[in-house]
Length: 245
Image (cartoon, rainbow, N blue to C red; front, side, top):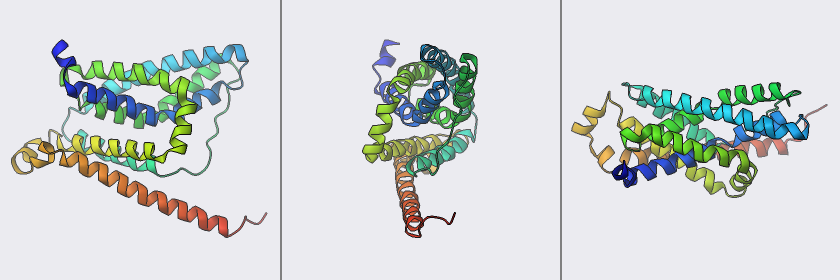
């Protein structure tokens, strides 16, 4: 165990898990705050604590399940494609504001938090499970528990600051998207279904991290292009004037 903890791959994977989870969990934290906003002030802390605690347990179980699935042939390829899409989506600004009804009772608020986190956690689960693949195989569960245990409380209590930083410094989002693309490329190149072929005919994909680098470049390039198109489209709609009432 001590030798494994000294492995650079362990700490690299742990850092990736924490960073990816921080990057993708900002909206979850906002939902938690919105769900508890209608409660009396004395109950808001309880709702956030209990709802977040249940969400953390659910997230850990879902991610462990995802890690097990990624050991099957072809699923790393599917997961890699999904991860590329998540990374690109991260770089493209979203239109419209989602509304979450505040819970009128403590139990309803906790249920809202849990259901919303379940619905919104697919991208987190896939990304965190893929990030764990970068670490030593026998320590992946330890990586997941540690990474989620460290990052989720930070998200809950520091979500406002994190969101403001991402709004002010877009480079944080771009680097995060690149990290997801890098993990996706590396994940796909190590799928059991094609691992033998890669080793025999395209070992440079893994030996020189070319698959990960290509994935990062693809996400940043495509995401940046789509973001610019989205901004240009928004600019044209503003110039056209307000809609007729």
